[in-house]
Length: 413
Image (cartoon, rainbow, N blue to C red; front, top):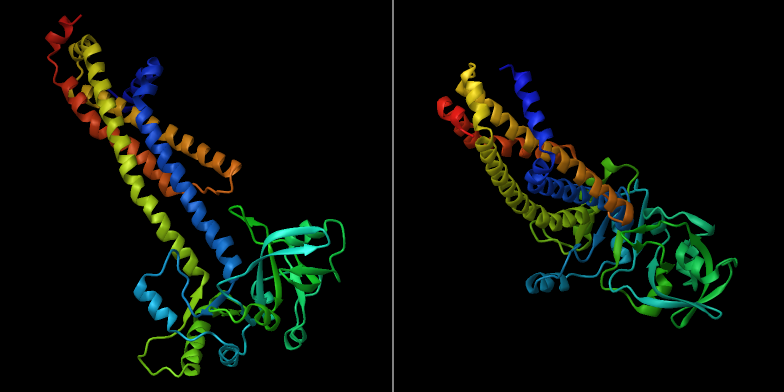
């Protein structure tokens, strides 16, 4: 038989038994769809964290000098003891970093953990759980804040400890609605502040608003809340390629400022947005470790079903096999025929699974904040799995069909 005839006959058999073929492939379809959909969501989340969350927290083309490293989860006891012995980051540290990096786009200080959450009031209106940050003016440039109304905080605000505030877009919108917020006096907790500016919206990431905050001068902030344990230096560079060299220079400047000897462990941490992305990837690796097991179970079950169906097909088509052998079909022709049918079945299951997983991932992205990006390697892997299952579990039925005695096959009813 010609290869074309073998393929046409294989798909003809599949088409003649549509319902049976579908249920035969159900295990493979579900497994492949799961693989494509979960990988798409995880890859989309990785990209989303890198493009949105990390940049929103640390800033683009930026790094931070911190007392404590960025950590997902809790510190163990030993690590916490080491970190707690570190000195606090101070304005003199920021000055040392600034002197070492005269070409930096911006170098600012911001209050760190614990960040106070207060209610902000204007008249009879209240917006609850607003994060209050004490900052120096360059921090606004590091975070790429765009002042939508009024002005940002200035050096004069810092030096005179002025009770002024710049509000996030969401806070101003909820508190003032149609009223002009500029020049209004609001209460942050128990203290009164004048609103001098409103930051343009940065939107939400995974349902978390990045517009629910108030910025106040760091000097005024420390009068009210005291110096934070984790005051942070934020450094913004003009280009992404400048970040790594600037980090090395900043580290050297900090070691000199803290009088650390060569070889002595640093008593500070320098972090970039990549740290957040790496932590997120560590979390998603747990999911990636589960995926192969789930897919393998589904694929094996699907392969066993295909093998059983093909064995049943051999029994049902015994007379057909006998006639083919009687008119000159060789054993390898019969083997190729049934093996091709098994591979075609499994590949069809892989393709349907890919389309189903793709559709499910798109649906998740449409109805939830979770993004989804289908990757080419997951599609290739899924289709290859389908074809591989067909070959692996189709060999035995195909060989059994090829080994049938033509005389006995012709006698079969």
